[in-house]
Image (cartoon, rainbow, N blue to C red; front, side):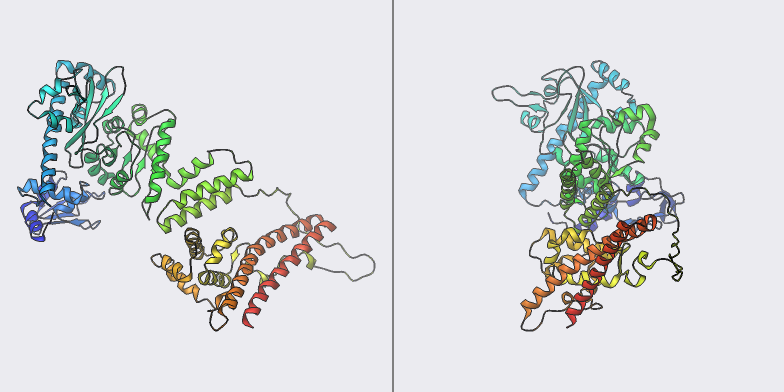
Amino acid sequence: MTLTPQWLDELRSRITLSTLIGRTVKITRAGREYKACCPFHNEKTPSFTINDEKGFYHCFGCSAHGDAIRWMTDQRGLSFMDAVKELAAEAGMEVPAADPRAAKKAEEQASLRDVTQAAAEWFTQQLGSSNGAPAREYLAKRGISEATRKAFGFGLAPESRSALKEALKKFPTAMLVESGMLIAVENKEPYDRFRGRLMIPIRDARGRVIAFGGRILGDGEPKYLNSPDTPLFDKGRVLYNLDKASPASRQTNRIIVVEGYMDVIALAEAGIADAVAPLGTALTEAQLGLIWRMVPVPVLCFDGDAAGQKAAMRAAMRALPLLRPGFSLAFATLPAGQDPDDIVRARGAEGFNAILDETQPLVERLWAHEVAAGPLATPEERAALKTRLLAHADAIEDADVRHHYREAFRERLDSLFARKQPERAQRQPWTPNPPRGNGPRRFGPDPRLQPPADETRSIGQAGISAPYVAALIGGLLRFPEALRRNEEALTRLPVSDSSDAELLGVMLDSAMRQEGLDCEGLLAILEPMKVYNRATTLLRADGMHFSFNRRLEGEEVDAAREIALRDLDEYIGVLVTQPEIRTRLAEATADFQRTMDDEGLARQQKLRAMDEELTRRLAALSESSSQ
């Protein structure tokens, strides 16, 4: 369909904005405008204004601004077209149809909505009749008040194969079948789908009845029965209670996803109105999109049993490819075997909110799930854990988010498997023994016991100094093939600057995902990211003259490239090894200070020699490139 600017302007002009907003927000007149406390953020002094003449609202506190259509999408949570259609119906305007087929489909859907609405009204009447006494008693036992019963439109389907069919006989049988109200079996007369069940209407985002859920009264299976997919109802694209939870979430800035509609209703009874539920399926990509339109980090609060926790993990797996900066999931863990209804019955809304205050971010839920998946005693089991975690990170399509997940998992792995150092007795400062015989007395520490001098600590335990990092990343940007070849070593590098560490991590992730990456291709991947400017700066690093920091020019480009790659590999080896040698050297020096034995001295001197050799290799790499 084509919605011209002229048509939309006409629609806006027919809607009185203050009347529209005043249906859900308390407004007061202030001269030629109206004022209210902003529905988009919590405030005590009104800063939200409505101007009917200009047709817009504006909040001076949070800068919310828009017209009637924007109000419907932002406050009601409707899609643009649903907002336009609802406003057009109110204004008495016809929405242009895209083509005859679309118009026919829209007409058919409208007719089916007449069927489901008529069925909802009939079910409600049955619940209020004498036949509905057992169902009303069941609701009372569940603690569902009459106000909640009416708000959610509870009804009753009698134990009959033809009662609904007879009640809705004004509609053609084919329409009753297509709407899901009747079951059609070959060579048999169509009969009522729902029989002997407590009926719960399922509404779309605009509050229109499109399907039903039925809970059996008494024994029998299935316990819960939903409408089948119809032209009105696609269970993977609908969330129960979205029409009520969407405006409620504007006040609470949260959305709670629970397992079923009875959980939603129990929470509503306790005063928690911002809950939704999928409809008999695992949370789908489409449903994730719906809740992310309302809040960036919805809370998943599934039952505390094994099935509920499996459903939570399925939702986590499905969300991973869709994650983007700022948008994720959080998980509320209920006590084993309990559901939200159990919690609010025992502890009330405060008890449930206390559980929500202890939510677990998605990265922590994935980590906890994989760590608990099996033993971690052997190297193979630990390697399997790492593989599983990095596979989760690699499922994320957004490069920045993927990088941070890989880093988070690596940090946790390093912490979990860190080698524990034996506790030593508190060391006393050592004073050298006086020399034997008549030789001269020496005072002060033995030079053999000193750790590396300050001027040699450019590569140390705290991290690699900036010039060395600049040379490293500049070389890797010129020769990205070295990233894949040295992945394990590069992930161990103690890069102290957080921005450089982030850039190196993104480069590693990019190289792991795409073989044959060259400098130009790597820069193209980095360009939309915040690390790009840092990358282009480091690509020009020339403070340290290594072969891999120079442009390849002249006739012997291939030979120069081979030398540069060889030097870069050796350089990475030095950068990784020297901090580890320095750590061991410091330990050996401290041990020798305590024991003063020949074995400790030999170990300390051996490590010192290794450290000096690495320093010579680093100098040689720089000298060879400048020749």
